[in-house]
Structures are given as structure tokens and as C-alpha cells.
Length: 429
Ligand SMILES: [Zn+2]
Image (cartoon, rainbow, N blue to C red; front, top):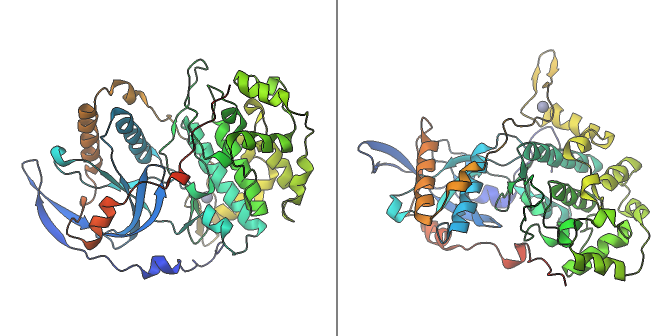
């Protein structure tokens, strides 16, 4: 994994992938005019998200390798229709180098045959999970530049009013130059500002799940994503999962082993049963100094920032914006903007830096469209129209090639292994 400088070679399996057959042909549109389309041919599966399968493909328009995500079973019920439409809207909304976005959406067939949605995104060679469990060395420069990019992407998402709700190493894609992008918005939603409104607790893979969710809080904020980042930061330093519990209760117990018994104030949003569980147990003292034993890279600055993320009380946990101002991230910022970013550039007289290293978005992502979605048929028509509108004035539209040998296995490939799904939350009491 190369930091800066010349691009390292892509992993063998990516390089070895056969060049997909490209053939252009004319295709009758359902409108009254002829429009040229290009077939895109599935090549091989590269990953599974919470709600979809990802394959690598070659864009026949420019020969570039890209990723193709299939969103299956979209129109089974209204809940899944809305979820997919939300994810699609988000993927088309994002414009940030550390957040994966849609490059294209494949042309849908006539609405009567419209069952699946295919989204084209940038192809990334690896993800932080694969890197952490691999034998390749991770220097403190790697850790800093990864953490910088995670927080940079998260600051942008949170500025858009979006909670990711499944931040984990496998959802942080990394290319061979160590550029990192947050992906998989299958569980993402707009923040709920009304604290009396209930939010689902079936979010976040258990190891990265914030204590307020483990304790049954009915309302939570974007601080849940920061908790996950803290767990990942520790995992990058120690090369092992920080809180690797067998159950949600043990997950909470491991957290209190490190942070000590939380105050009543810190548990104010917890449900009664969860609070009783904590108060029944032995009183624990915090043991934060063990974080220095994660690795030799766990310096004072690293542990200081880590302790600002792993705060039990979500209202006292550091924000992405404030975390980016921590001195630990200065070197990561410098490295990123010296040779990895797209926002700065080099001239003969030196590097010209952007005026805003960690941009936010304005306006926020608007989920008002969800209020008026009332039936599967209606949402199907709206999504169909939305995809056609995305094509306007764009390049030649793409569609999937049903003649391709890989097509059958691609369309029949299923959604994520159950182990990758966030498990159901514990029912307290
Ligand atoms: Zn830059």
C-alpha cells in the first residue's frame, strides 16, 4: 500500500480480471426516438453490502474499470422501496472525495420489467477490514492519513444532516494510493432533531455500536458514527477489534470495563432495563491507560484523540469537525493535501492549496420526498423517472448485457451473508 508517489499496482485479482466484451448496439427506447445504449458486462463479484451485491465491470465508454452495485428485491414492499430510493438519492447527492457516490445508474427497462437497480461507482481495490487483517505493515503515517480521511468524509456527511449508522472497516474502501471512501448507505438516514421521535435500534454492526444504542436509547445523534470511528482508530493502532463481544450485553460490559461505570447523567437516554443492568453490576474504575498498550503508535496525541471519541455520553463525544482540529491529524492532513487529494494542485512554483481543507455541504440532504411515498407502484414509477432524469445531457446511457455469461450469476447473486448484517438489538427487561 503506497503512500503518495507512484501508484502501486492493483491487487492481482483486479488486474487479472478479463477485459469485458464491449459491444454497442441500437436499442429501442420506450420513448419515440432511438437512443444509443452501451452494454455493460458483469465480470466478478467484489463485495457485499448490507443491501446489495457489488461486481467489477468495465465501462465500455472509456474502458475504465468501475464497480457495479445491484440493489435487488427493491420493490418487494414499501419499506424496501423507500430505503433503496433514499440510498439512490444520497449516492447521487454526494460530491466529496472521501464519500462514495454514483457515477451512473444503468438504464432501467420498461417499468413492467423494472425489478432491480444497478448503480455504477468508482472501483476501489480494498477496504480497511481487509487491510487490518492482512499481514501488510501499517505505519503511523497510514493510520493518520486513514483517520484523517474517515473524519473528513464524516464531517461532510454530518454537515449534510446524514447519519451513516454502519461505520465499520469493511465500509471504508481504500485504493492502492490509500485514498479512502466511506461507502454503503443502506442504513443511512437523515438526523432526527425531534428527540421525542423514536429511531430504530437495528443499526451498526455490534462491535462498532455506540453505548447509547446498546442501552436502548430511542433517540440518538450523529455521535453514534464517531463512536464507530473511535473503535476503528483503536483497531488500526492495535490491529485487532477493540470491543469484540459475543453478545450486545457483553459488548456493553467490555465498554464499561474500559471507560468505567457511566454516571447516571451519561445514561439518561438509556432504557430502564439497561440502566438497571449497569447499576446491578460491580462499580468499575476506568482503565483508559491500557490504550497505550495497543501499539507503539499509541502516542499521547493518539490516545488523547481516541479518548475524546470513546466517550460514553454522546453529548460529550467529540464531533468530526472538532476531531479534525486535533493536532494528531495535522500530518495526515498535510500528506493528504500534498499528494493525494483532488482539491489542491501543483504548479511550477509549488503546491497551491485549497482554501477549505475539509469542506461541508450546503444545503443539507433533503429527505422530504419520503413523506409522499405511499405505495410500491407509485415509488416504482418515481424511481423509474428519477433514473431517467439522471441521464439527461449525460454520456451514452449504459444497460446491463443479458447475453453475457456472467449475467446469470450476477442477477442471481444474493445479498450479504447474515453475519455482515447488524444483529437485532437486545430487548431489555
Ligand atoms: Zn487538497
